[in-house]
Image (tube, rainbow, N blue to C red):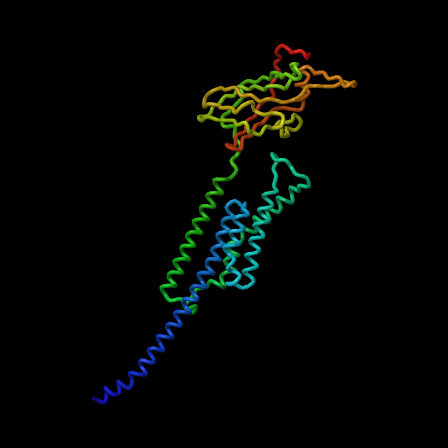
Length: 341
């Protein structure tokens, strides 16, 4: 056997041993990289859950209780993956969402009954404070998670995995950009549209008494306000029965809620280019009692004058299509007065 072959045979054993040790070391490094990548992916899921929830809240600032519960469930694993500052931040996000939900639940506008001890200013301030807080949280969340999600060669991620992570990050970035664009478009589309009369105008009006039978006697029940409305627009318009009716006071032109007294007799369908009658009923009583408790009924003209003595006009608001229609106070046209019996 040549001496060089003997030397090679002698070297074969340490080479094999070294190769085995290198393979074992590489295997250990691979396992470490896998462990790091698994940890990274689990942390990334928690971060994505936070960002997803922030985006959900920013959609309309009205998080549901079920969504808050789902957010806490999706981030429950964060207690074991991050330090106490991340756990505290996730708890803070959930608390702000609950406060925002509570404020929206308590909020009442002019068309809703006001509960006792309702503080409108406090409710509005709570809503504004929490909405402003959420508006800043995308950058705050990114800064807080940055230390746990930094990716570099020393972290043990091999090049193809690095590219995969970059691809995921790019995908998340594009998704976030798309969500931001969608949010901006949604905000633009949902901006309050100015109230409009939609080409409607009142060409004539009148008011007539209405009657009902009470205790076998024909009594004055109120008044029917009838308007001939011209639809000069190119589209049909429907005035729903749920329209908000307000009256405009003669003194200062202040609008006062009047839907409890005045309401449409039926939904008004106003075809394009046509003139249509629309009727609003006033449910008012004209009874009076003297000092002996004897009931009588005032004449309809006197009653009508008293009921609308402070009224200049009626204004209808339909929130479904942002319709505003001003109806002038009509003059009372008396039919043959039905005398009380």
